[in-house]
Length: 258
Length: 262
Image (cartoon, rainbow over all chains, first blue to last red; front, side, top):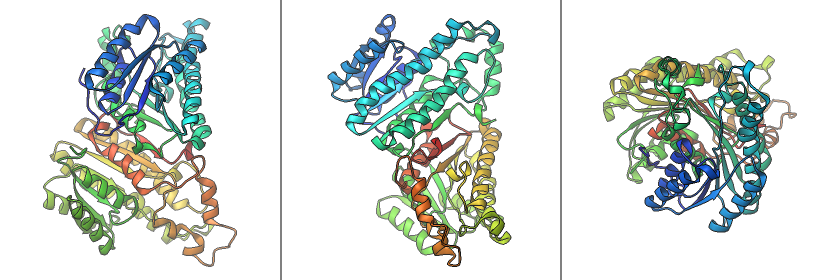
């Protein structure tokens, strides 16, 4: 992976990233580290080896890294991971709510289990991670929370009924927490990536017609890549964006502009 | 290493407020800057002097962005002076003393639309060809949170600023495949000289005293509870101007302390 070293800096800040295995989580870990942050890479137990690898790569950049098991659907797991990260680093400056799951199905085929899983991970998980880390940030008197939403939280697309609903909820959760925690100097923002090519959706990209349809819809003429998100996330985490809160920044090659 | 090394930036409204802050920041990040100002030569000259004093490279030019010939000349001067154009920041803007819609003077309405909306269009129209010649560029338009949130007394300004969002999205789509990104930022309440004009008490002494502009604004800076600074807006303009936002186009980004999130 090419890591674009952002010229904005987040030197010495501690960033906790959920879903820090492959794909976007890994890119953000390396991008934030390249911009000067120490990283707490958290993942569910089966993917923990990926978080370990990311931590090793963060250390290779010259920053500190810490790994913790974190399943965003389990409140005890959230509490334990946040406590462990705080114990290790002494504080948490940046929370990246990246853990997410997408179930692509026609609306008529979506089951209650599909719906519950998508909403548990993408919405409930983000809320309770934010609540746990928010407590720490309120004590600190500052913090930056960045939610990985999606362009599908802003526009519709077939086969994404449950994912889109959860991500749209996340966009407004972002606004609500921004308003509520502004007095504590905590900013809460989201990014809205377009369809981003990762190992998680490699199977869907076997279909050249589908890929062509997506690319035709993206004015910049290509699918998103995890590293496209680094600049925006570092910007939102940096002092450059101290007055930015409640915003959802589209990093979508122009998909939502038309 | 500067974030705009090797780039040439044309900043309108470069003599004061957000434009001035951005001109200084862009120069600090390695850009050569053409600071454009409407009439205030002393202010434009001061921006250039401050950039030069900090070791940067800048020049200034005067011109009314609402006049096509002037807009064309500002772009031409940039190319003549620095050889190319990579970044256009449309920060020039005016407002008029607050009046309710039924009291807005038609000529004043036209004037605000001419500068705030047509001026940005003209600057884009004449900047895009040299950007295409140079292989691309980044255009950053300065709208306002007032484009999306109603504030009494700001009809012309809000209408012009809302128009900028449509202009931005259209241009983003039109030039996406040709290397030009176009984005718009929406400042919240930022303390700049413009607020002296918008204040009915200062700008229009006969306005009924029921409109306590500053009291009203103070109630609007929630939830963060403070005015923004021109430097904070400039930081976001820099993010959108620089290559770190290379996959961002057609986006609207508010820098408003949470005002629009309410």
